[in-house]
Length: 457
Ligand code: FAD
Image (cartoon, helix red, strand yellow):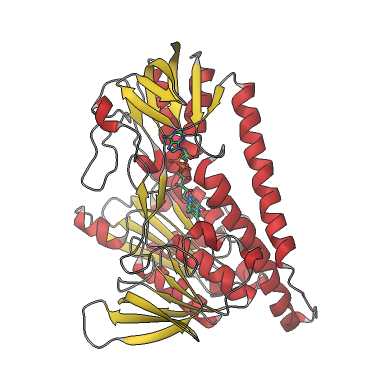
């Protein structure tokens, strides 16, 4: 049996970060991958969605450019669009392969099964290690009454734009994936209806900024229905007749569409992994139980990323991978971080830290400061004045607790807020930091000034 210091199962963002950091720390590392290097994020998640969103946004810009005197007649070539998406993915996955090799990580293709606490079987061969990192990720959740297939898509199928655009698309789920893909299809020309069970889209986020994003999406023609559930469908000659009902029950309605995209969440991918053989415990939703060191119920066996726990985000998986690798190498690392989240629609939505509600529940004396982007010179020059920056803080201590942004490049702006939170910044720190003019980043400073009732704009 070949033996290693560490075996990492899965090479998504979590797994490849773990493998590389462990190798940097001098461990002999084997990484096992059943599918493509780079996992969901690079192959069918973060990266291809952003490539498609960029193309859809470019098309949108060309259409609205007439308003400032530029006329263009864009033509859509779906085959080429698919090619662009694949080209971006290929560059990145190839890069990860090179990084693994360059750092001396041995890569083994095949499906790994645990056969003991520190033993793995791949393609009939056994491999042993002092430590294991389980980084097997997640897969789309099916919705009752909507089995995935030709008519009902998961997010992976929805990425294949070259296979044709449905004229009418129903998106079930108002989280990041549903919103992003819904906007791609809308901008490429489909009629899009999006339903969300909860009272507002992005139910885990700040409802006020989420509502602003919803309005922006509605303005460009996406029909959004909140507090609504889809209960089943029937395929007829003229399309899929989907039954919708109010979330609380009551009289329903029917929508007729050509395809349904189910984006209601994801579940940990642990089937067939043999967790029971290694006595690794999972929680009631099937996520592998871990402590702050990313260690499972079995000492020396770590779990990271989507397989371990929400939020299901690549940058969270990456950081957890580094922590697990450092612990496997004998260091003492723990996860104690703020995890920002971003929705890459345009306008973008981004948030980090506590919402008003969460801050109140945590016992803070909550106050907010808001800055509408309609007052931002830079936002106006970008044609993106619909949005706001909202800061949540503690009135007594002036401590910054959370930041929520809707607007252009919100995903880039939120990094400053994440740094401020990590450093324990006060609203005064944010307000006193000189931000270049004219930039979108000034809006953070302005929101902090508004918190102190000293806004200039
Ligand atoms: P994964 O990326 O799921 O990788 C797990 C890997 O393990 C896979 O390659 C799989 O083949 C392999 N594997 C599984 N079981 C075995 C086994 N037994 N043996 C060998 N190999 C195995 N997150 C963001 O932060 N930003 C975004 O913009 C974003 N956009 C997204 C868009 C979409 C459409 C989707 C679906 C997700 C998006 N995500 C985004 C979420 C992000 O993709 C995940 O959080 C991230 O990929 C999780 O990384 P991971 O390493 O835990 O697992």
